[in-house]
Image 1 (tube, helix red, strand yellow):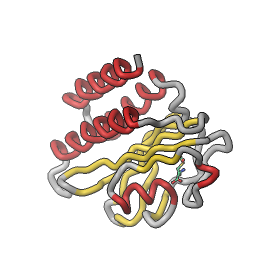
Image 2 (cartoon, protein in one colour):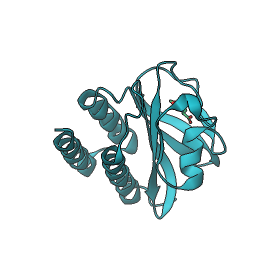
Image 3 (cartoon, protein in one colour):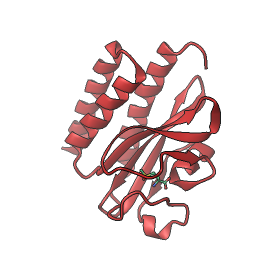
Image 4 (cartoon, helix red, strand yellow):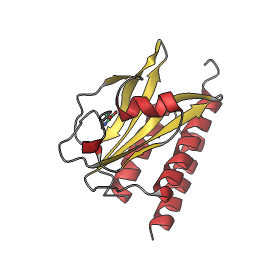
Length: 161
Ligand code: SME
């Protein structure tokens, strides 16, 4: 059931990315779709590396509670760790992870998946859940495929990077 949901979302993101006017509209489409189809993904958003300060992540389109973390140095947070390690980071219980930067008091678990373009990490997809250990291997695979679609769009549309 979940897997077919994942497939349906990926197919819609893929279709939208073929004609999206810009990266922001593709990101807006993606966060809205994911938040609607997967209600236990309680916060869904993008952080992208600042092109003029690539050591800092900047909040992009998101769904969920407002966050104080609009800019995150890559040395901080679960968000920073995913960029620093260039890999997906899953935290089953944010309360026991000293790296965690709190957004909502209700958050229990988090997954952050890097987005690559031209072989480099350019940003990430960040998901929080109110449920503990909400993110399994299939969620990681699904979000990595989403990140690959976004990265491919960036490669197609941004010549200078
Ligand atoms: N929890 C993240 C910060 C971003 S908010 O969850 C939206 C972190 O630890 O990096």
